[in-house]
Image (cartoon, rainbow, N blue to C red; front, side):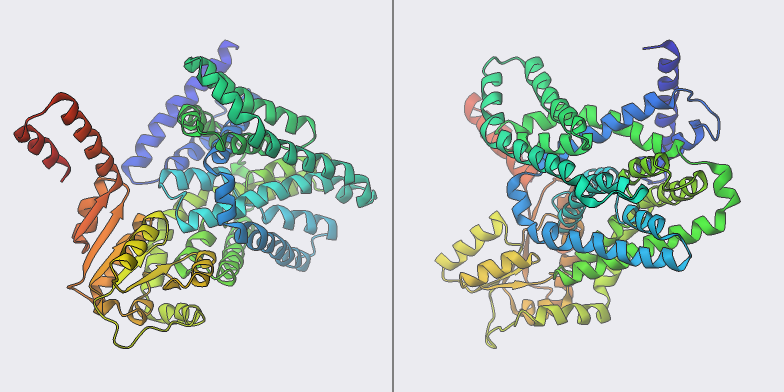
Length: 557
């Protein structure tokens, strides 16, 4: 590596450290800091970076590692849980958004082929930014996190097919001439699925027997880069190959170990992606075309938000989930940049079109962390609004809520995951009346077929809670994973019933005090429970006295 490149990387890292410190001081996401560093150090500002190609290469590695870790975390089992989003919601989002923007651009007298090309690019959202923000907020497993993820995965796959079709936009070739590339993509996906099931788990089992951490991490990186390289060689994207490689490892019992080793590398290289996006912005071009760029940014984000929101409502997702999902993925994505460059090369668009679309895309991405920062407060306000709660209840009423008029002193279980199922089974054995509230419509349909007392809906809805007679309940147990949603649910329940006992399952010890202040009587913390079990083992192993035990355990009470 040349000394000049090392000097440039040092400059980038120094600026990043200062910018992140400032952003964190004023409660802004670190991604904003990376965008600012890219703008400052880019070719249109201070010109601190001369070798933009090297930074671009590092950023692509960051996207690969992001999608690789995403694949590891998102197993085939998780795919089945959001199949409605992936196979119905995501295709609807892409084609409906493309159609609306095609009409919108055509009205502005954009040529037919160019309008179709731009419309398909606008329909794509940023996997890198959204996933990074969801991971930072520990919201990957939240309902809106899973919904957004399902739509983003479909978009990343469809982006590859757009790449295949781009020569059609640029020439008179017919679609049949591109059947072979489609078949290549299908063969790659089927091959990786086979490898995931038949080869990777056995390979990793052999590797771990040698008890050599270096060999293990090298094997994991080799799998990632090899599948990415094969994918690229077949004319597909590196990112898709990396995601499929992660998906293969997710089926191994060693996926958690692989994930913990890759995450530090991912975070370092991913920062270069956000910086490289900032470098693309031509400040002079934006100033010269400020009003038209601002108009298009506003229209793109507004229309995408509305379309995604309506699709989420169509999928029978709760109001809060629909709002957060639509606000999370209303920007234009990084794969649009790749397709945009290809469009310029094929003369589908000119240099001015390129800069215009690039400016709108980058600004929409840069605004995303700020939008998401306020999205939670906005969604909380909406779901608490009585008018919206009445509208939301129209969906709940369609599930035919019928509760016995004399029902009282019952248990209300919010969330029907592993914990919720265990509680329901116990209540049944104890012959205690109970009701379940679940926001996943597929789970509700499945459990209703098993004669379970389960109802679809958002537990933060006051009218739904009234319908299920929470005001007369003896006990409410909250098992959902979204900490923000838990806070809203707690305050809503306390508006109805100040005496009911509420037990909350939380993930982190730091949330215990917050939930108790908001009305929870007991908070069962997974982090604390695991710690106490470890301490009890330690006490038993070293024969610790009762006084010392009590003193230590009080720290986690």
